[in-house]
Amino acid sequence: MDGTIPAADQPGPATPAAGEAGWEGTFGPPVVPLQAPRAPGAWRQDVLRVLREAFTRRAIRERRYAVLSLLLAIPGFVFVAVAIVAGLGLSLSFAGMLVGLPLLTVALAGARKLGTVNRALAGRMLGQQVAPPPPGPASTRPATRAR
Image 1: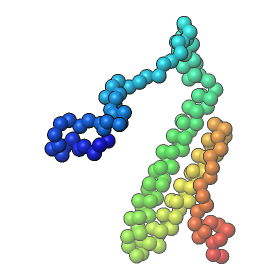
Image 2: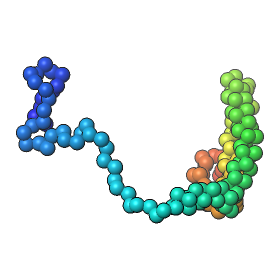
Image 3: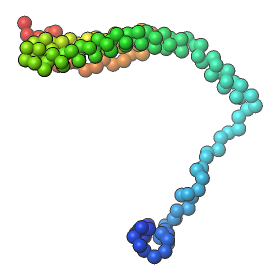
Image 4: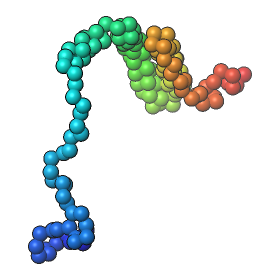
């Protein structure tokens, strides 16, 4: 560009510099790539494929996984939410810290166990291996606890 600023009270409209390609095609319709012509009746094959897809073994397994995951997720969410709210509420007082902080630790450990169960369920029902989360802090792992 030639450095012309349209809103700076310069005379004349903003135009591209003489050596530049300019704004050709900038405000035109988008260019749609050409597609190869489809065979007659190809839409019928597409419709049949879409209708059959819902009844494949994979789709049925995914629906079963979704239902079982929902059945596990609802009580899991309630457990974790109640434990965190109760743990934070109890942690506000000095005496409550004796119960609140361990309750928060239990909620965290429970959430990690629920994640392990969901990963195992995905591996068993869908055949997908989900990487485990990184290990927790050293103080919460059983092998490194104080004896």
